[in-house]
Image 1 (cartoon, rainbow, N blue to C red):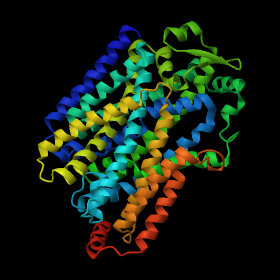
Image 2 (tube, rainbow, N blue to C red):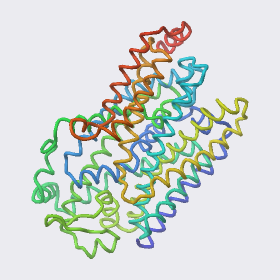
Image 3 (cartoon, one colour):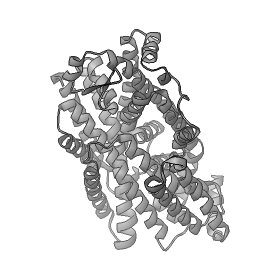
Length: 503
């Protein structure tokens, strides 16, 4: 890495820490720390949701999947785009309204407990446990992505790179909470957008234009340009099913809850979905045309940027396909621009890790510590419990990420399925069906989470080679409806539902 690139990168890191310190001064109670006092504007909420959603997966995992397998991997992007739009269209406004009416709920477990009047706290505790379980894996995926970035950029060992990335992200999340996370995510979302548009455009130009670039890919393997060739029905269904995950992601749902007004949803939806679709196109083309570029690039040039190259079937490729965006950023651009692009990759990683750490810390502070152990805990005490929870959860995630053979996409897919299957159906039913009961919600969450774990660990392969979110989401919905039909929600819950639905 050149000196100019390094300086640019360091300036970015200092800027993120500066935002953390600024937010620290505005964080006085737990609502500020985990929800920003419900004062996010539509632009910040939309880009913050997008940046925390897409993570290093958008700049490492998806381009890597396309680089390794061609456009058949783009079905995931189609599913995600549809899911994100539906989430903004049908869930965002209602959740913003319902969470405020339901005793001003500030976390997903808090909302579920208040929505169903669960005085036993069982629903809250089970929900918090699910969040902690799957977010540990999700956060690990970000740690792996960060390690790959620092490893490729600074010629560090994997372990050194892992700890460096973790320390930076933990620092500003620890200090500033939700405001720091949202403000940094806003900046990071802009950087990510710039990177995802710039890299494929320059790559196509370097290859001689669109026609020359696509011809170069076709000469390597024509199937890389075909979305359906070699892809079975189960694989397409599994990829499209990623869209189901949106309805249950706590770090995205809290952005809806934090909007300053439900009236801001249409503008936020336009910004958020537009940002996402263009970003997905950029990631897909980066991976696709990266194959053609690397195949003809000079090995000595690639080695000078710490890119490890192998030859398979006469094709020159990166040893780690998930580093294609990193390699492109350094080879194609001036060192200062390369520093900005590498900062964008770190932005994608940090924007998701910080959100996940924050939701996990709120689960420990609000849903375990306060609900079970210290019901009279002061706001200042809860903020500090949340801060130390950030550090503890991050440490566990770093330890899980210690294996350099882990892939970003693999870890993300497991956690994404867990949240989508456990919370997605219950969030939707709680917002649109007054007949759902506390027992139905509890049973659904447990069945959804357990199905994902069992399916992923024991049943995958063969006729069960279906993304675990599909059976988890389906079984959760069926169980929640059947169990709810066995009882009747209390009158006050029905009245509150009618009030929220009419608002």
